[in-house]
Image (cartoon, rainbow, N blue to C red; front, side, top):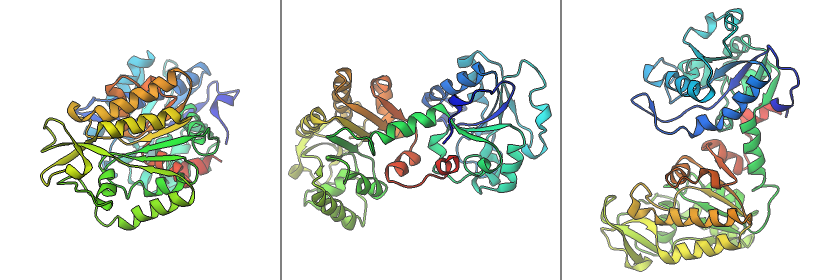
Length: 392
C-alpha cells in the first residue's frame, strides 16, 4: 500500500479525496462533528503540499436519487470554518463536469462534489462511472476507512483508473487495529455490547483465539443470561441464537479465553424509569434490563486493571438515560485511569461507543477512537475489505 504522506510532488495536482463525512444531520444541522474533525489532518497535509483537493463523500442513503435534505452543503460550511478556506460545492452532473473547469480560479483549493450516493452507479460499483470520476483528477486518495468494506465506485473500482494512495486517517485506523489483532500486548480484553449477538458473532469468533477475555454487555448479554437460565423480564432478546451462544463458549474453552457476562443488573419498568439494582435471579416479568450492576462493574474494572490492550465496541447499557449510564461511565473512567499511566493500549469503535465518550468528553483519552462501524467490525472479523484490497 502506498501512503499519500510519502508522495513528494503533489503541487498543482488534483487529488480526488474520498472521505466519509456521513455525519448525523437534524434539519440540515450537524449534531456530531467527530468524523469531520478526524479528516482535518489529511486536508491540511494536501493544502501544505499545494495540491488541489476534490472531495467525494456521501451522507445518508438517498438510494441513487437527489435528496436536498442529504446535501453536503452543511458539511462544506462546517469545513470552511474549520480550515479557513473557501469551499465550493458543485452540484453539476458528474458526467458533464470537465476537469479543466474545476480549479479555474486560482483561489480555489477545495471543491466538493455533491453527495456521491445521489448516483445509483456509486453503490453498483459501476466501472464507467468510476472512469468518469477518475477523469476529473490526477491522483486518488482513500481516507474513508469506514466506507472501505463497501465495493463502491468511489472506494474500490476507481483505483483501476488512477494512481491510488491511502490517507492519514485510513493509515491510523489500520495501524491501531493491527495492534489488537497481530501486534498484541497481552493480556488483551474485548468489551462487546449492542443489541444483537448475531451481528457480533463473527467478531467474537475471530477474536477468541487471540484474546484473553471477552466481556459481553448491553442488550446482547440478555441472550447469555437467558441461555444460562436467568429471567430477563421484558428485556430485548434476539431469537434463534442458542447455536451461536453454544459455539462461543465451545471455542472459548478450546482457546482458554474467559467469557464474561453480567453477574448483576440494573432494571427499570421502562426506558425513562429510575434505576433498581437486582441480582440476576431477581428480575421480574415486567422488568427491563438497562445496565450492568455494581458487582459486574467491579469485575470488569478488575479485568481492565490486568489488561495491556483493550478493545471496546458497544455500550454496557441504555446510556441515553443517566440512570442507566453508570456501567459505561465506570468502564470509561477505568480505561482512562490506565491510559494516563501508560499501562494500556485502548481502542474504542462504533457510533454508540463514540456517543458515550462524547458525553464524557473522553475521545482524546483513548489511544484510538474509530468512527467506522461495519468496516471496523469486518476488519476485526478477518474479512477482506474491498477498499483496502484495491489499494494493495
